Image 1 (cartoon, rainbow, N blue to C red):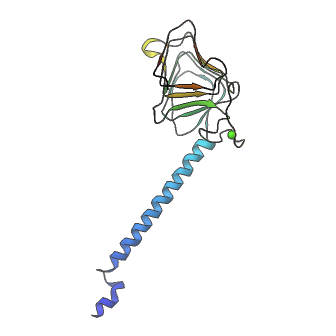
Image 2: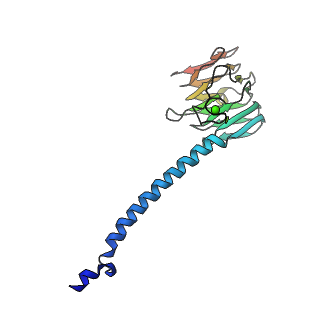
Image 3: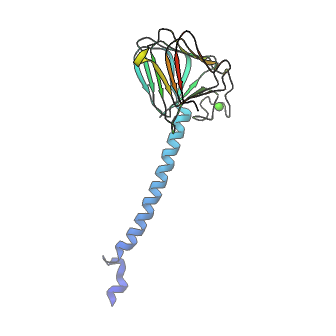
Amino acid sequence: MNHLWTSLTDQDQAPKKVTACGALYLWKTFFIGIVVLWIGSASAKGQDPIIHAGTIEISEQWHSSSVHVISDNLTISSTGSVTIDPGTIIKIQANRSISIHGIWNSVGTIEAPVIITSIKDDQYGGDTNGDGASNGVANDWGNLLFEADALTGSNQSTLIHTKILYGNQVFSRAELSITNCEIAFMQDNGIEFRNTTGTVTRPY
Ligand SMILES: [Ca+2]
């Protein structure tokens, strides 16, 4: 009978307590891990943007792990190509524009659209401009311009599941394919094609 009362040292009894504590410890670790990941993600999207300006002459892929800020006018040269991952947020400073001579592929999904918006738009990616709560308004930024010498045919630029908000307009002199996109709160025509053909498919 004595061995029943010395169970703290009994190898047959102790593991049950250890297992219970271990499960609790694992759950707490898991929960803390989730919180750390959430804070880390919020920080990455709110305070560590990737800055773009000037001319891009090579192929780049922009990922959704950081907000991308267009701090000054941006040109994609005839040799340049930018491919944008689903869920990527791009914020454009006041009066700045993006001009595309090469390729601009904005490839969102219905679950994770690409967002192209104003630096003041805190709805996406948090308070990137660091001024507290702020909202975008039409004409905050300039134009998304697809220039006449932009690549055509199978290399033409595409906008898929992309939201374009609070600029002046999307203006295209080149072939351009737009599928399942939302272009809203723009100052001028939301989108204008001039001397070219464009394809707009299945708008929201
Ligand atoms: Ca703000």
